[in-house]
Length: 138
Length: 246
Image (cartoon, rainbow over all chains, first blue to last red; front, top):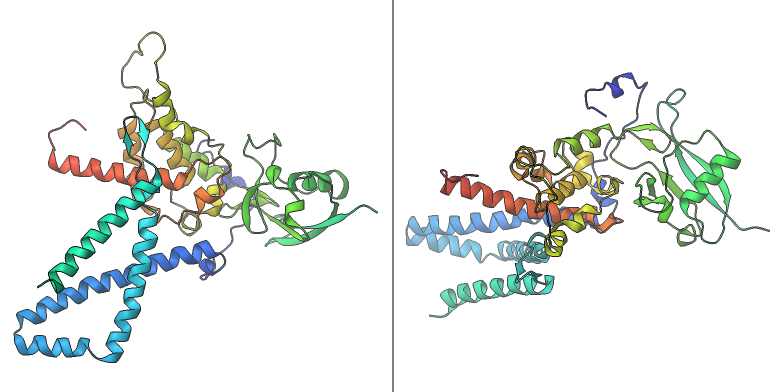
């Protein structure tokens, strides 16, 4: 049927439900999806926190020290631990989706999902180890 | 006495009602009966005014998709026995405007399907004589996506489509991939022009439910994500190699 056929125009009335605001609470998979999307805010916050730290470093030693002591406040520490959990959740759920998006063929054969998944986790591990070495390895 | 089960069916009669309501029917519970058999029993014996779509009764035509207990399913492939003790709730597919009872308006989907040119596009005119040859490996590239029966369960499972009806949707994109990955096709760029828009692949936020409900294991969510990767590579190529033929 052509989209301009006027079908809808001549129909007496069709019913369209209004999507409830909390539609994502109705089904576990939808809730999981929204949680994954919302935890990306924690990832963005992590990036901003790092920028703030660099900015404070540029403002001199005193500013940096006061920033560090703010980071050590129990309330801030607890907040950041909760955000760390959110970032981990985001990372794991995101990595688990990778095989569906990445189809790699080698020699006419599709590389199994497990291998793609393992590659992603390995890359995450290597990057984390490199950061840990930079921070603690001296 | 014969066992029975209660079906609660969503009814909408636009000539008398402004909103849909529920109507209950008691139908016999017979072994190997599907939800569609129960609906046909209602239509034949209890209430001839009930409207719904169906055709093949064997999971091929894709017309009998409905929400059963809140899940989009093919009613011809859903056993009543698996839904006991009931009552079993039957509603029209979510996300589509309801014309009557369990019948949704699919005009929007058909227009979107046409926009992605779901046929083999060739640039060589006139077409060369003889058939286009294809190896089994080339067939395997797209075969999964060619299994789509347009049942629209994936649209009913997609919250994005209901929130943003402009979204071109899972099945249309999976079918675009079916032709893009076909070695005989040359319409990739034309489809990319439609699908790389905001209402195309970029509206998808990867909820993944379309793949879960697909009765033919088409994996539309995977098709969309693969298209995103391809579109991104395409974009980088056009930036880095603007002189190259796209």
